[in-house]
Length: 170
Image 1 (cartoon, helix red, strand yellow):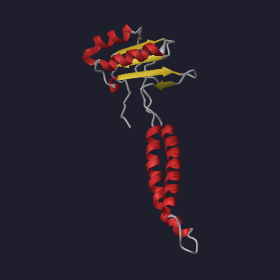
Image 2 (tube, helix red, strand yellow; image 1 turned 135 degrees about the vertical axis):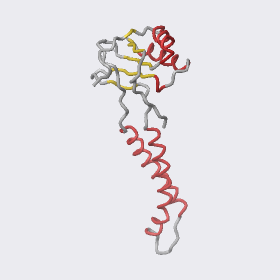
Image 3 (tube, one colour; image 1 turned 90 degrees about the horizontal axis):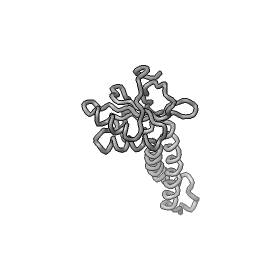
Image 4 (cartoon, one colour; image 1 turned 90 degrees about the vertical axis):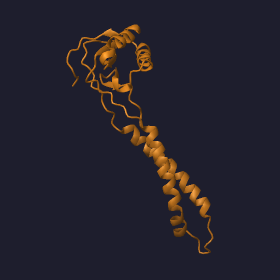
């Protein structure tokens, strides 16, 4: 899958947003103007108080794809063994049909397991700045020399400057 490092250790611009639409638009424009995902941290606060990295990609599709390929190969590979074990006394059997059936079953079964494993892979938690704000969405940008441009973009969409309470949330 894609590599994504969302740690905002060197965030120059930190703003909060009241709604996700404005925050999404700001992230989109930051990307269009040349900021990379590794420079942008984007978190949202859930109702239970946990913080979720909104730029993190899901790993369930990759797990399902790998599981499907492995299952198909394993199923086709086991078909001759199953045919030999279950061969009728006459010795006539349909190896091709058994291989297709085992391959499809293996692909579906291991694809399901791979997708479940991909969903349960722990996400790399973003180090979000501690906020005293009630706004649920936080964008942190490590802009470096482009500080003014990044600040202009996030303020264009209604971002509120956030004074840093501490450098990292616990």
